[in-house]
Length: 375
Ligand code: G3P
Ligand code: CA
Image: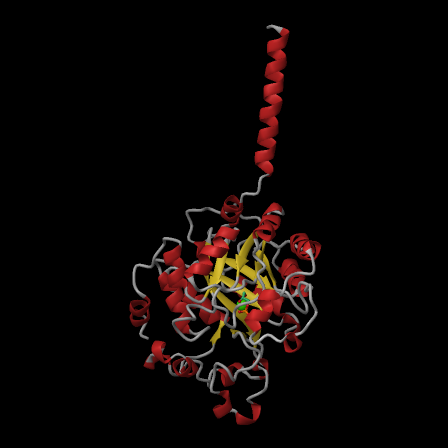
């Protein structure tokens, strides 16, 4: 073989080899999600289908499930007598009739109530008052749900089994909640053994390795979740402000001169690139498979925060081998924006709209699904 030819072959192989090495290290969020059993992009029904029905109730979760959402999202708390239940707010006034049923305790935290007391509350009527155009008589009297009851709902449709996306809400109020959660998931058969086979993409999300995703804003809770359930995918939630990413400006909302919080948050940004990156690095080091950053929404509103899904941010997160699930986005214009920026899934109150956007529309309308479930 002529010397020049063999040198050329050597050079070519080296170049090809380098190309392959580069391709091997190129971030591939789709493959990463598949290996974890997490749909890509993921539809995460925020407190259930909470645009269409009272948040965190059976109506919201059954609707999200039957529309075909990948995950039922919930904020986990623990009652005074030790039962895990789902509720976003610390207190009960916004979403229940606690002021009527327990007037002297209306400002007490939800965790100061026993489950029996919580179950006396009407967690549906507030929605009819707040959103008369979406009101339904069957929402009156809906109950706060336990984690057990939400698991029953997730398992309840033979044609579609969503996963659970569980947030430890204000976990410092609930010492040991990570262990309690593990025990419950284990008892209900929702913990896949750490040494079981890799994800099978044929399985429904609620049956595979990604059937549970754990999420928290709290570093200490992430560490405890990792200790208790190392095999379960975990996501560190991010925002700009106290306890999370340090802002560039320390001017408070009150001193900012802004009229609404969304405008204030939209002008916020991380102190610098390194500040953002160190939160991603921390999440990675603690075993998280991704982050859950906030978004600034086109229409503003009370779920519009700082834009933490800028393309460079998502790129950095992907470069670390992690996924990005952004909260909480409801409009097509914003779905488009965050997808173009590179996110891998969206928390939404409007699972039906996001499914349409992803070209996976539900077989039935929201109204039909509600009706089919007796609402
Ligand atoms: O869990 C993601 C998103 O839900 C975080 O915001 O306040 O709605 O729990 P929040
Ligand atoms: Ca949440």
